[in-house]
Length: 266
Ligand SMILES: Nc1nc2c(ncn2[C@@H]2O[C@H](COP(=O)(O)OP(=O)(O)OP(=O)(O)O)[C@@H](O)[C@H]2O)c(=O)[nH]1
Image (cartoon, rainbow, N blue to C red; front, side, top):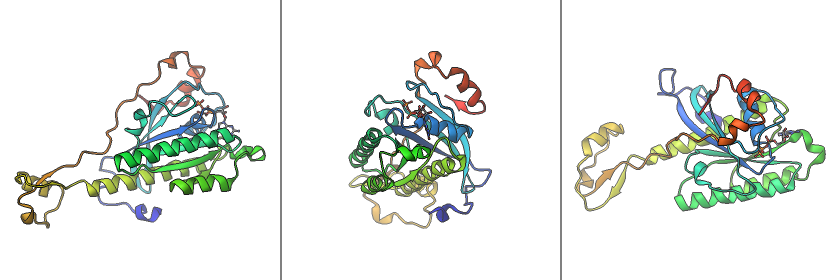
């Protein structure tokens, strides 16, 4: 899979602006969303997190030689998905997390995958998701087998990994980078589909600028003289996400400031 992006490409060099990718981490309380996010961003495992915090972090990554400006939203739904638009309309890909030692969290992850599938159907867009069975270090207390995780992922056509936020950083990093690849693939698919939107029976006003802008110089639109061409809307634009007001009372206020030094919090 990575071979598609295995080489630096035109426009992907150090001079070009990094690709912006938004990832949302979903899952029931206690599944390990914050622990995984912090592990990925800082290489450290911290055991105490305020469950009411919902933060979005940003980090500069390099994935397959391509610079990526990555934003990670560590969501904090209560027990079920709520006010989901905030991440559904924002993220390019999703990490759906459950804990291998909790059947309840596994069932919760299934609700999130259903939500994503429904959203994809409604919007007719792809929303890449990765299913993560976290707390692999607790495998002796497993309530969910690896086969069950793989079967659920298979049902929704998503990738599946078992991980642990308190074991090696490289494994967690690989999973996040895989999510970036999935998002990038989807973004590329959308940008390929983007240039032309043909609505019939309207005059063609924008032929020349469109041709130049989208690099379609070798195409001719003469057969579309009664059509109008518009740009498709761009994929969800990143927007600033409100950090929960409970931050000031956060149990992890001090560790957060230390831990996330060097990362932008917005
Ligand atoms: N043993 C073990 N514990 C973990 C792991 N990941 C998270 N935990 C612990 O599980 C508890 C819940 O982790 P969080 O990261 O807060 O889980 P969350 O999904 O963000 O939960 P909310 O913040 O309530 O939404 C914490 O006590 C973590 O220390 C893991 O990989 N292994």
